[in-house]
Length: 190
Image 1 (cartoon, rainbow, N blue to C red):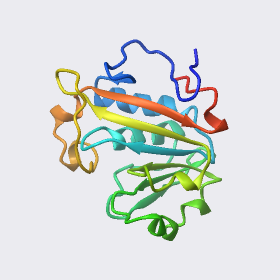
Image 2: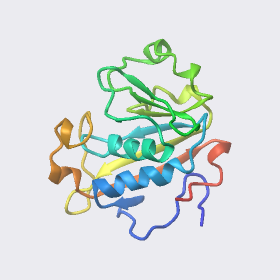
Image 3: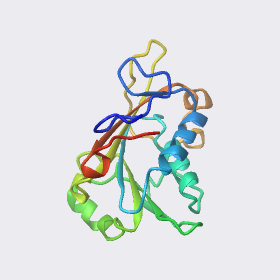
Image 4: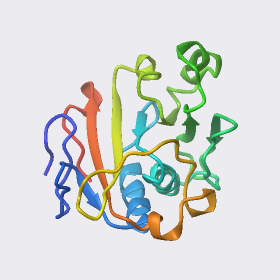
């Protein structure tokens, strides 16, 4: 069952604030694997979410689903990593735009050069990468507090190995999908 423009298939529990409830880091990774089944070369995915929201964990699942060379870790200090396909599919370009100072720096890393032949996933890309493609999938990840109120945070560097405790890694998240452009006009069916 698809919902129009950025909807997603109902997998049961939805967050009080809208979106898909993801109870653990393992479930976030599994969501990434399922999402990879929808992605194809030329897709731009923009991720947002605070510290420990699960962005890198979701991308690890996407990488697993796309069958790319890993390991997939946050490219915080290198800005972008290319993970070639091990199965003849598209490469995964994983970008962390947190340290980019503006559109000129996005141009400097030349993301549009590989956009057509890879799946490009950009953490912290809101307000910076929208000009790369008229069609894009925007995914917002929110850590849910015990009372269901979304928490906010600052820059995330990944999973437990990057300073997010094991307990925080297994807190529930809310994931919201917004499809923009013709590519995502039929919604997201996960």
